[in-house]
Length: 177
Ligand SMILES: [Zn+2]
Image 1 (tube, rainbow, N blue to C red):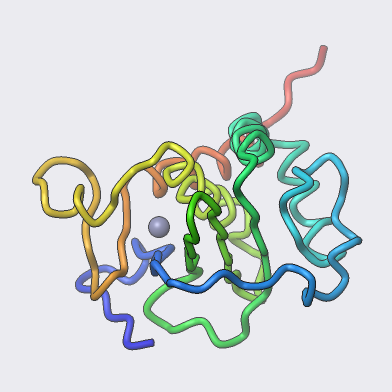
Image 2: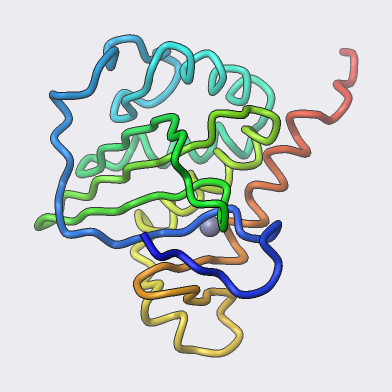
């Protein structure tokens, strides 16, 4: 994919690639297994569903992201484990648009140690698209917190921050009632 990010690899949680194709939903395996507290327009394996359910229970920010995704009628999301993620990033999302339809194909690493942060980060990129952000345009403007890392690959401070918040909420000590 030729993804190459300058500087700190640790800071690169995500790349976004704007593709032109919509991935057909009907071919996904085990899509019926998604946990129903998660939005119905997210397709994922049973294993990923369990992992996301824990994040959903632990993070109000993640629940808010899910609410936004669930309310987006023209959106479909596919989450998948990807053993071939480039070493330059930890996860990435490919967006495809066709008319008003938007499809997000989220590729996640096999190791789950940073899953809350990574999923919170990727979901914020999806919310950015629901909000109608033009990352291509914003990357050309100084001070927007959006930058282009390679051809059609973008990163945002907003998504990085969201990932950190989701992780923090997940691991914050719970106060007893
Ligand atoms: Zn990102």
